Image (cartoon, rainbow, N blue to C red; front, side, top):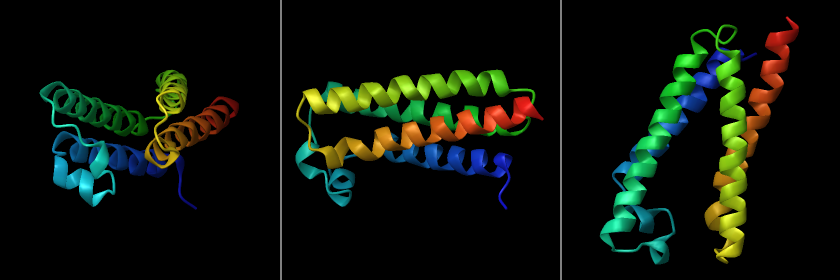
Length: 129
């Protein structure tokens, strides 16, 4: 059975890789992921997308660091859980209200809520042990 340290490290690698993709995203990358019609060739959009990529990498680095000593860092994990819930809510509400097709934002908010739920379950097991 995979332990919680390994799961957090896998999540951190997924986040870091996702951030790197966003950091270097261009029209071709959008086309590869089936989102070509979402590409906006505007400098501010490109800037925001790269900044978002850097923040996703930062989040992955936090998860990796926390995984080194989950018991000691469970308070930080709790904060990350609530942060992911806020991000997931923002993604789902914003995507809905701007009438973005669900396929473009559902994976992101589902990922956020799933990781938050995993953290919630694991924090309880750390506190109860």
